[in-house]
Image 1 (tube, chains in turn red, blue):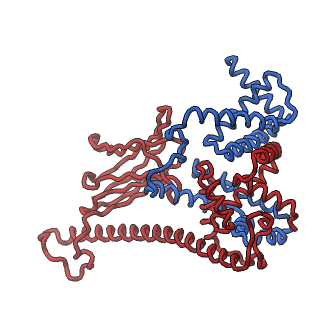
Image 2: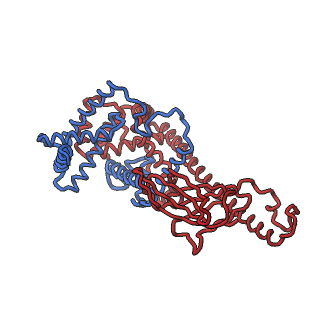
Image 3: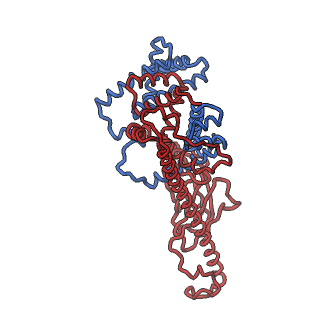
Length: 315
Length: 194
């Protein structure tokens, strides 16, 4: 059973956080938690609990108002509130436990009963529960919506790449069997329907390269580009993330004139770690072997080659 | 080593010695006290609480070098922190702070809508949080969730056979663990350890 002294501790901490103590009381409270780490931990715990209760709309009206005017509007508290928001979004999306801890009906958190502004009626408890449920649904819905959209985009990209490969195969076979035919001839009636449709003007071919692990015996990964490919998107997996920025240079060992470079790149988080993405205009690329140097740069100006990748381009 | 550096180093060593005779334990006590000071300045609406906490330690170290006798280091730090807070407020009154001096992320924005880059950063933070939550044990993860929902925390404490205060502190420590994991992930995505 929670003692009334614990309730008093809770109420004093909430009053401190919401600037409801006199200067003298606040100083006494501060002196206590600055000298005693347990008291400080308890204050931190109550602060986080207060934020979560606010975000879940579980605070009584007057405390809620105080929270908004005395706490939430201060920039130094923004980080804590943002962290709590993320925690709520992620923990609410967790699957329910098989045997939940039984929570008995309640007339509100007992810790707030002694608080001067607090009184909970069954009707208020019910309305709070509905509001919490609604907020949870909205937060969860938003999160799931974003996840689904990301999955749909990934699926669309995969389909696009597959379609591009089909087109490439078809073009190759057409070039072999119809060498002497006029290019403007109608396609064979048995040809796939997709070829009869005009190809979209801007295909993007994707290539994901890992340093030193996906190299084949000659030329690493291969990528085929068609005349309808506008861009080659290359995702470079970075396994050494300890640099301040990165410079990418794409070169062709067989052609010293070709040199594409981009500096000051920052990696972003992908499914399998950090990734740097560069887009090359496909029409300017010729078939052959390409080597990519990823140079790591430090704020001190120091630079070194972090990774090298290679791929073979087929047209 | 210059004289000033030597003095600073001596003061810091004396401070650590005051906190604990064991150097490793002293380091832990130092970090705990620093967190408390940061919290104190934050609750007193200072925008740079870390700087003020470090300033407090610098001044306390200086006092130790001067030979000041300190019986309770926590209480002494509080006294110094209070002085520094007053000086801070006075300096703010004399010199209005510029918006450009505010720490990153605390400057007011004229655009209430998030940019694409900010949305991407937030998505990454959510991913890291999700990952770190997955690293917690099932019981701990469920406790975080049950406690956060907050229908009846006292009942939850009874079920767990402890007091509400103990559960509250346990949940706080779990959040701290998560926070450290998320910070570690943002520094180095390969350091996914909790």
